[in-house]
Image 1 (cartoon, one colour):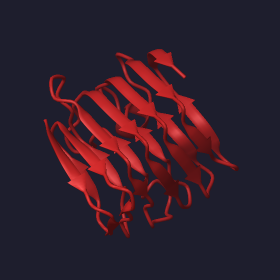
Image 2: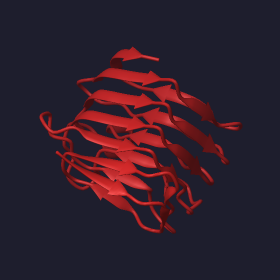
Image 3: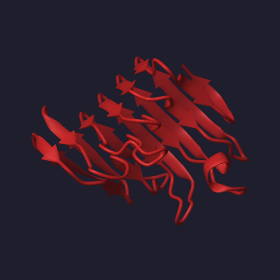
Image 4: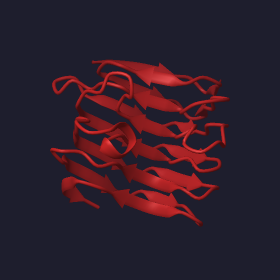
Length: 171
């Protein structure tokens, strides 16, 4: 896949990734949409990885589940996601919104596909509301082969890490 370098600046928009790419933020690259999630990863073909690296992500919405930092998986057209790396990001959310959400049955109904080969490393996630810094919803078959390492999760009135149906995870 291609690499897109994002210059320093504040981008008040929702970023949707629907093909294998590397999205590389330069120092000072801020994604701060007024509504909705910061980054939505809707597809990740097995042979073309997705990487999101080096951003400050600060969705501005505060309504319940309306402005997650990064969402992996699509509500509209659910597909399995593979080979995703989320690294070196600073994510801050308001209200009851998660830092990273991996979709599954709990958020989308039965038959939702899983996510495999996910790496989440060297990120800082801070929540101001009652929510979960990193949340993985239920799926069958289970999510698999995840590495969640060297992160700082700070959810003072919520939960830092909540994983459902994940096999082969290193934390």
